[in-house]
Image (cartoon, rainbow, N blue to C red; front, side, top):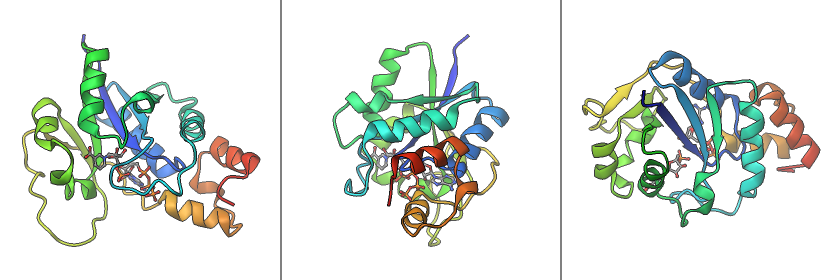
Length: 194
Ligand SMILES: Nc1ncnc2c1ncn2[C@@H]1O[C@H](COP(=O)(O)OP(=O)(O)OP(=O)(O)O)[C@@H](O)[C@H]1O
Ligand SMILES: O=C(O)c1ccc[n+]([C@@H]2O[C@H](COP(=O)([O-])O)[C@@H](O)[C@H]2O)c1
């Protein structure tokens, strides 16, 4: 049988429990067999300056996924041209794993800017997109929400961001519960974000 794989793309600088809870919820409560956390070297919409090196972010994702049978870290984008366009990654993955069915996972907030993604029509044509709820800013219409290639999954809403975590670590705050334990220990050990 073809394996249905959810793809959770992110810079994961660092990965936090918000990411982990969503990824795990998708793997456990939707029809996805696995969720791959794809570490993006360079998001086309984000500045690269505050980014930790790719292998450090991957290491944190690897640590976060430990003990979760259906969550897998992926470094597939490391060898692809940058900035990383999701349409390119999807084509590459489909070629490498022809029997897998790949479904990108996205927060409802991201759907608002989806029409600005490179070749978004191609993504929609070839893939079912799994959407989880997110508190969105602004009130523009979600024109994709009722699209047949959109599947909505009622996951918990987690308002935590990597930006908040980086800032808090810099200020010496204890934000241990916001990170998987092994990720918190690694950040301390490596003196990241100080
Ligand atoms: N708390 C959260 N709950 C659900 N989804 C999230 C959460 N934080 C981020 N995401 C989503 O997870 C994916 C990867 O997130 P990303 O690595 O950009 O983290 P981030 O916390 O948004 O980072 P930053 O604060 O550095 O912008 C993105 O699709 C993003 O929208
Ligand atoms: O392909 C695109 O045009 C595109 C535009 C913006 C974002 N993305 C991908 O979406 C992922 C999540 O984006 P973000 O901004 O929520 O971190 C990130 O890993 C990017 O590679 C992709």
